[in-house]
Image 1 (cartoon, rainbow, N blue to C red):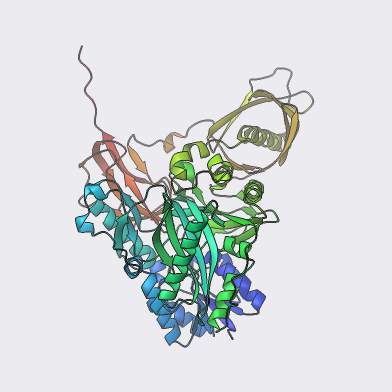
Image 2: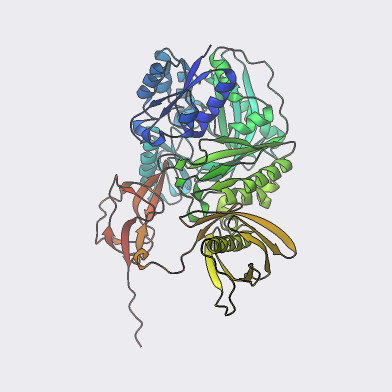
Length: 631
């Protein structure tokens, strides 16, 4: 029997495994990097072991250090979580050779399936030879052979871009997974991403726990997942389940795993088998009423699964809450998570709590929110409302996007579920959410009330011009104009049609079109104001001249590390619009910085290894001046 378990991972998945261990009476051990010293998973474990350093390659990807930590802490088992070393056969062997119980499939099964190239060979699917890719093969997908989560993945639509994308994907894969192997396969446009959850014991029993749809993705990373996958023809669903079971049996699979497919034109295309627990496993747990982590531990202890797969019930949907700005190219965000509060009735899987800091070293996912309901319609409605009511104060997040996505007709009706959802709909989904304008009014009046409380003042016989405050938020800026009234209240002059019922520094009540609504307001010293579910930023009345930058300045869109500069790039070079100049790595993703226009590179402040903060000057491109037309 397992008595003490080390989780060779961090954040949300470590906390999730610890939760099951507490229920089972199993003691827990965390590992952490210097960047994670105060993280929630460290605080929740019974014991924790430091892995010196901050970069994944120095810490969570060091299998030797993790095994050493397990032995030092007296652990008798290791759970790999997902990501990092979870699909590394050598790590699994190292764990087993150290006399520890490995919570995962046999190393031979990992080797057969964890590498996407070898998995395809096993199923008779040949990847494309990069040296022989022709125009007729485009578009193609460059993909990391190890790992997942969208890292080390590039879509190539122009043959001239292939070599550069191979190099970029390989560098990102090596950084994220310690393995730079990549391969090329045909890219299926806008298919559905459907997968099958498996659970197998060492006695030949294989459970196929239904399907999941994970089609809503950005940068090849999943955003919203659900179970079961809606609207699949019965024959196609049966084929997916059969293929997944055959794949598991072919390699003598044991433990939890997932077989992924891309469904297009009524046909299923095999993508890969993930030989680990998936991020989206909670939706399957909710539908089938099982604890997959508890079952993983039981299987590792030699238990037999019941011969019959559990029966499904209802529908479950999961949304991934990221610290990122969808309106700015999904740029990851960092900073203090000042308040994080999720309403009841929602399953919360997270590695953060109020007061924690979101840093640059790891994935920007804050949490997963999962709901279950008897019907899909009920689950959609329940999750959208729960997200609206979630209070999250701190960095910009994708919360508004998640709400808008769930309520978009294509998703809400399951009429058009495919991986092109955000390509088609992102501009409409990132407009100002409903209620943003009155939220800005509430923010302005709360600030005015706070000033009045501190300094006094108010209505005067000789009224001066209106007070004006501007707030930025999703969808653009909102200008508010108001004036104090004789009775100690306020009159809003813009936007029109708003009557002030009551105003205090932390709560404002407004009437619009005969309906009174109440707004809870929290303002922070950095100018960020949270009004209900709205995140606003107070704009300064006057621009600080010191904040002006030269035309053509390229500023860091996020904090991170410069990992590469284009070969031979130097000040004085001519560059063309869209030309890649340098690459930043932030939160395990590589971000390309390109020339905004054709011109001359007049400054280059980036160098490999340099840490930069958001807004740091990276380079300057002086655009070519057009000669004036002669008369």
